[in-house]
Structure formats: C-alpha cells, structure tokens
Image (tube, rainbow, N blue to C red; front, top):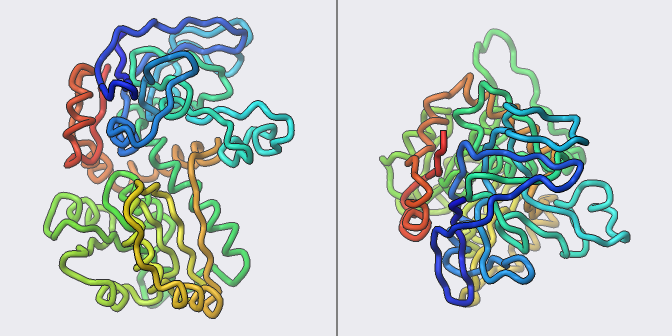
Length: 372
C-alpha cells in the first residue's frame, strides 16, 4: 500500500510502497482509511524536530488522526464487526509492571516515558490505506459523524484538558449562579481565552462555548479573516494580537478564568499568564521547538499564582474518556454549528499530494487525505 513516511537520517519525506498490515493476533482489527488528518505535529516531524522510527527501521510512517472502517476482525474480537466506523487511539502503554498508569489503561499518564505512539514515537502511524491494531485501541464512531469524525483526535486535546479543569476547580465554588428568568438571556459567568486559531484552538474554543464559557480566541492574523469568521459562527470572539495587545485583551475579557494554550509559543504563553485572573487555570497543550531563551517575569507570575489561587497544568495525548467526550461534543457541534465545523476543512487530498501539504501547507486549517 502507499504510505507517507519520513526518513530522519536522510531528511526525506515521501510516499513509499509499505507492506499492507495483516491480522496476526486474536484481538486484531483491520481497518481501511476513510480520512486521515494532517496536523501540526506531522509538520514538525516532517521538519525533523522529532519523530522516532520503529526499532530496526530507517523510516517512520506518520499520521495519528484517522477515521477508518472495519473490514476484517480476528476470532477473539467481540466489540467490532466489518462496516463499523472507528477512530484509533495514538499512545500504546509502556511494558513496565511498576507503571500504574499504563497497567490501568491510562498510558496517556505514563510515568516511565517508555510508551510508544503511532506515527510519532517508535510505531508506524496511520497515513496509509490500512491499519491493524488490537480492538482495545479503537473507539466506535456513529455513522452520522462519518463526514467530520477525523476531527476527533485533535478535539481530544481539549476534552482531556477540560476534564482536568473540572477536577481542579472542585477546589472552589465553580457553578454559575442562576440568572433571573425575566432577564431572558443565557448567562455566561466564566471567561476563557484560547491562544491560537489552528484546529486544536478552534475545536477547543467550540468545546468551551458549548460548556457556557464566554470565549475569546487570541491569534496573530489581523481580522477580518476566515478564522475570525468561523469563530463568529459558533459564538466566540476573535481578537488579533497584531491589533490588540495583552492589556487590551485583558480589558476586553475581564477576569480570565481559563487560558487554553494551543499555539506552542512559550513567549506569548508566559506573557498571557501575567493577566490570568483570580482562581484561574492555565492549560498548556503546545510543545514549542527549541529556541533562544526568553525573559520571564517570574516574580509577577509566582506572586499571582499564590495570591490569586491560580493553577497551571500541562496535558498531552488522551485516554478513552477524552475520545468518547470528543465524539459526544462533535455531535453537539454538528447540531449547533455544522457550517463552522465544515469550515475547518481546507483541502481534501490524494495521498500522493500529502508530502507537499506537510511541507508547504501551513496556511491550512485542516487538510485531510481522503479515501471515501
């Protein structure tokens, strides 16, 4: 089968003839690709910032966002039958008995770092026509979401983050007070700022709006633009960092209860941290590349964290709960804002076109390799 692979030693990205995977174990499921998403992580791997081939291989098949259709199951499989739609999870557990997270099926919280990840670290990914894996690593998808379900994996980043925010904010009264009926409006008592208007940021903003947050997307590109239009479609406000500085942002938002960082720019993130509000939570999801050191006002940040009861959290990968939450939210998004969800898709590509998009497609929101 054709697959997209990176060759770290020779610094090449190309479509290769890769062996079609076959069922070999009692719990194996084989799927055929429907859509494969191209994302920022794929582009960073194609820039050779990271990405580790499997042991003994000189290349890594990339890709970790996929919607597939089951075409074959092994004798021990009980959860799926041919024709089912599924999305595969990305991370596989480490082998160590002393890692309680991996032994409990929560490899997204692995203690040892010896996990593997499809298309990222030591396991081939999904950017080919077929995938085989154990049934435990697939999540069923309703047929009604076939058109957009390739967005599930990037949405899980926000889902996991919001699950953690919910746990953290049990420390204080967090439920919005009820508004009087005669006001006749939906009251939003929490303010959220999303840093970045890529697919992870926009999907996270949708999840925040759906949960009742007054949501602002803070991104570089001057408005008006396509991403600002999408924000308006689902009820978020787009603010350009080239048109409004941080003080203006803080004045427009008021007390910032939550910052969802989805841009991977540490200098911006730590500047925004200065205006995080009382009892606020700052969620890091981006992984910045190695650059020159930046100056950070650590005294101000530490003082605010202590005196304003702030919390900072990093989150990566996702467990089954976040995948299931993403499917539930995507269904809500399609009911409320179908045009906004569809507007996230920039181009549908043949697999032979994927390498060029990975190298030159930074203006896209979400390109997908489409098989059906």
